Image (cartoon, rainbow, N blue to C red):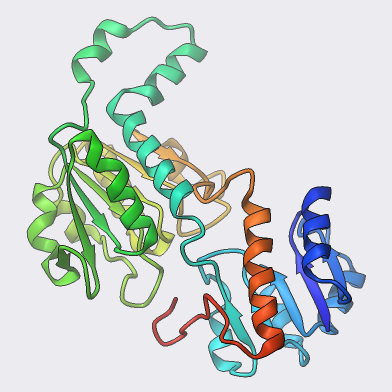
Length: 310
């Protein structure tokens, strides 16, 4: 079999990949410096690992399985019309790093770390103004939109801090999406970790953002399509929300002239929440297991259900 790999791999990762693919023809491309040779290798591949250029997939007649190196499916929805190409993603793989980034963002706002970091760069001692504004998580009501692995892990992390945690899901959780309007006004923290689908697009629109408690903190580590960003900017500028943490945005990379860069009380973590030092090794481990399954005709793990959108 011919395997095309679209990952920026260090030497130890390359060794692990070759160990997982003995006897196979493997072509490794660097996503940041693609060549015509890389495109030709992809065109001949039966299997691809990594988030390959979507237009390359359109032109391929040989591809039969794409193992994405992400949970999200942005840019690959057209594969729903290619039933001969199986697509798998990495559900559950990023639960710990994403949940920990969400926790870090919450604590940064509650303990004033974002402001302290800015004052440090300016050599500004302003502790007396900050101390009365600092908050703790004890007794705070956290509303987590999403009951997948990330949402569950974040709930586990917040509970020992004394937070009252409630989860919201489409079909499971403490409550369902149908009850969202009722619970939003009582939440001190709202964290969205839902997938991007037609049903979740602008779930937090201008009307729902207006329902949130004054001074509440909003986080989005799901997909940029979940939030009406114009409405969020207005809410932050008006001081109605206490702050926001966005790991994902509607447009990525975020253009330099986008107003989110200069929006008050906003932390942008630039879609790094799923990152970790062993990210590639974990991806290769999942791929190796699925490759064994592919060879033997066993059902693949993480097979995307295009009707559900994840």
